Amino acid sequence: MFGYVVLSMGIIFAGYSIYAQSVLSQLVRFVRSSPEIMNKTGRISDFYFVTDLARCRYGLVHYLYRNAQAPTELAAKFPDYDHLRKVSNIAYGLHLLFGITVLSGAVFVFR
Image (cartoon, rainbow, N blue to C red; front, side, top):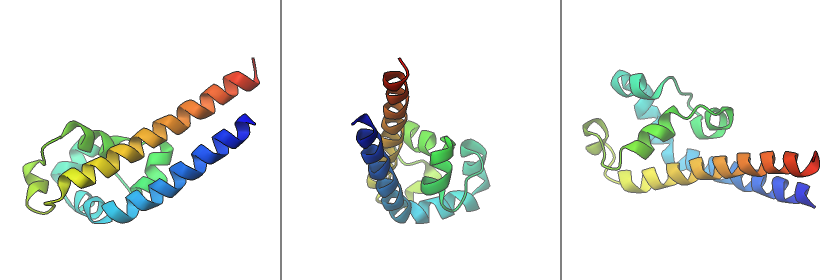
C-alpha cells in the first residue's frame, strides 16, 4: 500500500518537474550564460529541473529561494521573477517531500 504512495509522489514530482522546466527554461538559459550567477549557483544543465534537481544539485533553487527580490542581473530580464521563484520553490519542496516519503517508506518497510 505504501508503495502506491511513493509511486504517486514520484509521478507528481516528475510531472511538476517537467512543468517547472518548461516555465523556467528561459531563466535556466540566462543563468547558464551569466558567469556571475553561475559562480553563485554552480554548473547547471539545460534540463535543470528534470535532471539536476533529481541528482540533488540544489544550487539554482537555493539561489532563487534566498533571493526574494530579483537580483539586478535578473530584474530587467524577468519581470515575472516572483512567479518564477514560486514555481522553483514548489519544485524544490516537492523534491524534498518525495525524498522524505521514500526514506519513511524504507523505515516503514524495514523496521
